[in-house]
Image 1 (cartoon, rainbow, N blue to C red):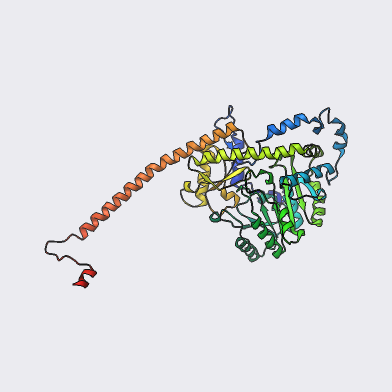
Image 2: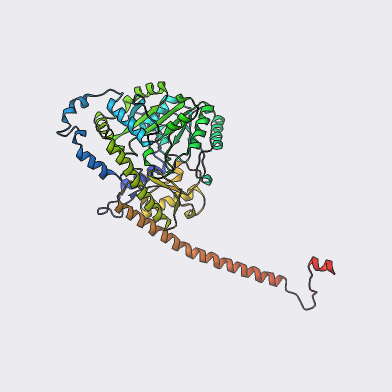
Length: 475
């Protein structure tokens, strides 16, 4: 057998993670309300499926957006032949305008800095390739998306150094945590080339506030390292506080803009992961030039560019979609978290994303990652829900799980909640005998101690009554 490359056969893809194992369990036995009612429900995939009826209505009303229709066929030839890796001008203009609208119109983006890529996965690899050499490192606050281990490391040889964030302060990114990670990298003889942040956060569903972002910009400016802002969930912020982009912060503070880069896509905000629309937006001319050459390896198809340009150029549709998406996400998040709270399950307070960071620490048999994996296997194999354990996100504390809530219809969500409710009731019933047993054991132990004490201190009628030191002192 002829050997193939070590990079190809190595474990750099990260498929041995429980994050991907959960997907495999789902794919082996996927839930279907009729064909597989006992199958695994996919709650490990961050998809936004809540607005497809809204989008479908627009598609039906705009046949010219499709090249395979009588209204759009006149543009078929020129679109089919288009292969400029700069991308269609109308596509870049529409995406730049959409990015500005998603950020509340508080900042504008230059279409000439829009670089295409095959989804955010390709965009992240592209940025890593442009900014770092093999063996150099990026700092990444935890918990972070498991795919980063693949996207940034596998083919580039770049290392990732965790910035450990803790539940005690709701996983905030602090200067102390950043400095600790930076020093740890130096001790390991790793040259730090950048810091990667996700805002809004995957898996936390939280946003970074303005002061934190300013502190991050100050940190990277002082260290002279790059800042990559993954903002692919920017339009999923469904309640206050509002999203603040790194593009806004650099308008407010002094910094070297050559160090600032944004990764964006339409996979989460629009719910179009299959279209593979990834974007690198850099304020560094050299990075834009290099990334554009690299985009040949992962161009967005011209047919997709045409559809997206037509759709996002419709201001009325975009404005209505942003509002509709927020409303649908808010409703689903509220009903989901309320249902969980009614059976005693909490989660990190969040206002963005397509998931929650569920707190199951009290269900662990012991505070270890082995116990977390034991619980995860029960949820996968018995409850038949694919949720993602915190350890796969490099969380520093066992017992947290990411659960996606926007990738299914209402009926499937009801089934998932029923399974969770049943599981929690069984858990609570199992805990009652244990508590009663512990109470009985405690009572027996106290009774024995009392009997032992009495037997040891039992006095004969002739024995003098002992006096306390205080009584003896008075006499």
